[in-house]
Image 1 (cartoon, rainbow, N blue to C red):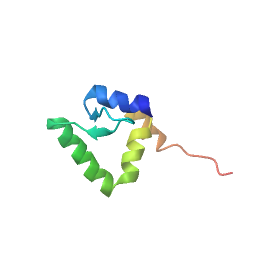
Image 2: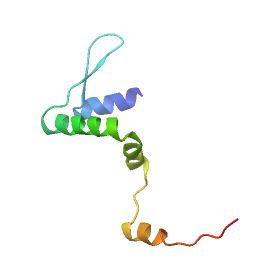
Image 3: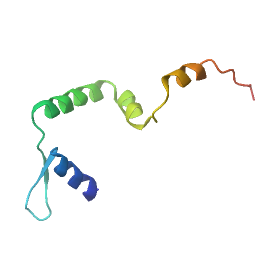
Length: 75
């Protein structure tokens, strides 16, 4: 977890305090902060869709369309 937090600090999303233990504060600004706020609102209304989008593997749209027409054998 600490590694991820440090990555967010490096990317400018968080700010790390000098306290022990350190605290991490939201530090994004501008367009990044606006995008994060939009994502937050979307997550509140459609959390499952957001989680699916995060964890869904990159798929070829043509293959996804073709897969929709596959006929599966009944067990």
